[in-house]
Length: 60
Image (cartoon, rainbow, N blue to C red; front, side, top):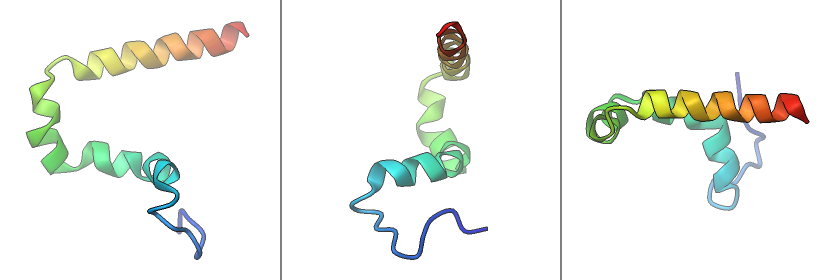
């Protein structure tokens, strides 16, 4: 499955690239070992922030 159009320019559309490939970055073993390991409670913090955002969207 292709996630972007043929004319997609990753340099100009950097933010969109992150949005469509964030799953790859966050599950990449180098990221997990080298960066994520420096933040032991980061999964819980991310989960709490997602929950807060979902609650705020539901209340609108």
